[in-house]
Image (cartoon, rainbow, N blue to C red; front, side, top):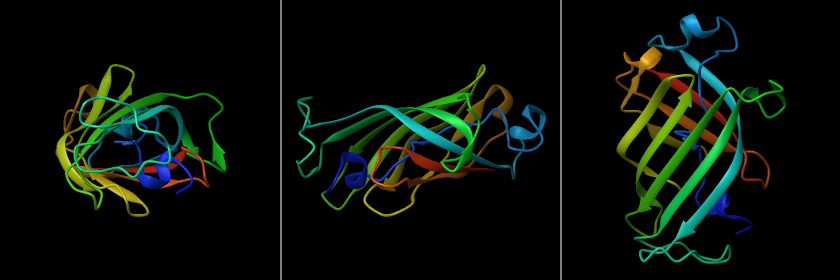
Length: 169
């Protein structure tokens, strides 16, 4: 595999998870937290590590196994990789623990924008597919009415960056 994100296709993350809201492409902050909203971000990775169960960092060439932990942080720009805002308006953080060698994982992730969060707490997903989807569990502040939805992250090229679509329910 060419890089860690290829091994653990993510997010974030961006809840990568990845990525976050705050400003929808049209409508601004007043509609961003509404159920049924779809938000799109270009997520630029700022850090990513994969450690074994004892906390020892794994080399990029290692094959992840059950018990390994992925941790990733990103800055998120409204738009997509081909057309996005000049400045980031949100950030995200994702921690996933692999439960088996096929990429199944339990994840915790947050997307922060302003004083609000969209989060996924202890959700199950598979990190080895293309277009990783992570279910949302809730939100705070402007997103306190979020009771579900998902974050779908698609890797951009062979980078650790991704296009993220957040669907709020």
